[in-house]
Image (tube, rainbow, N blue to C red; front, side):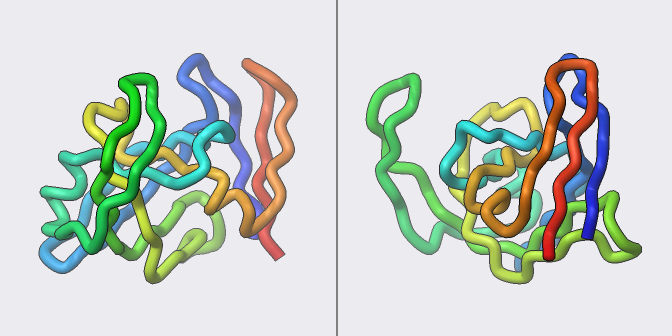
Length: 127
């Protein structure tokens, strides 16, 4: 699967679809090479009806915080007709992310990300 795009002023943006027990959320996902774990915005968590399955401590700009973790099905659109599909993604939940999701290194480890700087291109390939 190959996903390609342009790196805009807000970064590497892709369409994501997140499905939980009570609904579906569609929106923007930003590829975040600095994030160890992918995150779902708390408004998205509420929309899909996901409940925390655990809490994990993370060091953030606000200090150390215990963040809820949810499980959901995630499709990163823009690839083949069904997109890049992760049926049981474990997602940290953050507040006011500015996007539905931040796609961290846990997702990026499933493929190879190539990029050429702001205003240029990115390409994410999976085997």
